[in-house]
Length: 433
Ligand code: CTP
Image (cartoon, rainbow, N blue to C red; front, side):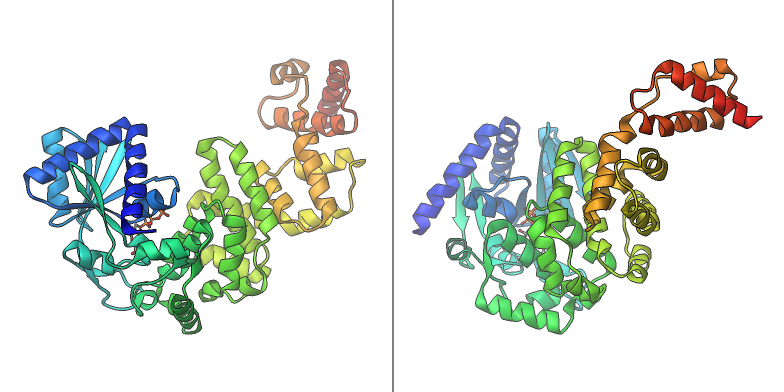
């Protein structure tokens, strides 16, 4: 493909994106006019340019400003009356128009004071900014003007898109920023690309020299959690483990990688749950499946040491605290032992039981737990708490216990009538005397 052909492909996708989002179209055209009036150069950069060129969905739009992005965004927001957020620490900014947001950063050069640390930055021109980026396919820019967006590709990223290659831009890239090792695998899997020969050699050297040891646990977790969100998670996460990148946390990840099948099932469950729930559920399942194959002693160590979201950690602790005992008990039961199954499982949360199903390699454990989740656990007594009070059962904990007792019995006799439930409630009351 010639440069002109790439340019026309890019212009078409960029135009189509503008047409599907009137709020973006309005915002970007105001931003561009404002920049032209101040003789400031603006460039679309990073993932959005790559995604426009490869036909992937564009989620975030990042703009590099030649000059101080912080001041530019603040002045623009005041002029346009847009909402904005300024991030003092990195002197970056977001400007919002209705549901759309555009991120601004200054074109910059980066110096890494030491491997794995966050870089020190200084303003630069766009060419220098592109040179400091991770991969050639992420280092293509498009200069914005009122007549459109013109590609600028000083690192030959277009050739790598054509050749489907992930290529780093300089030999110290992985050393300076070892998160790029995770990113290399993530983008390769997402785009269906492979690492270029030289990048592969440097990748392997980085692994052998354990460059990831310069990363903090929170940066490693952040990279893993980005991986959890990829559609390609079921194939990607086992590859990350086998590539030895997680040696820095434990050598066992290589020996016991997670099951692709379990990760795929986890994604399916999350797809069916509500948007608010699915984000945390995916984190919980992914960590649970990733850690689930490791030796027990390592699991507890990792749970303590990794900076996980508090609610996710709690759910994981609840699951790992009971999974061995539950598996052993479930192996001895069948669907005929309904009351026993109910008695064993009803105290555990749905999340604990789902992870038990996802992680268990024993068909009987999966079968029994699914039988409970789909059937036994959904059977609620017909009798209501106020009716139990009328019978004489004391308010408070006994109401819950009586309902559990009835549900337990109902597990063996699903067609139980309300009258039979009342008899059971009276039996329960007797047992209290
Ligand atoms: N970048 C980099 N090195 C990193 C992280 C980011 O050079 N360690 C650069 C890349 O040019 C990247 C851009 O910053 O394209 C934006 O980073 P990010 O939002 O993490 O990645 P995207 O490419 O936008 O990918 P995604 O689609 O996953 O959001």
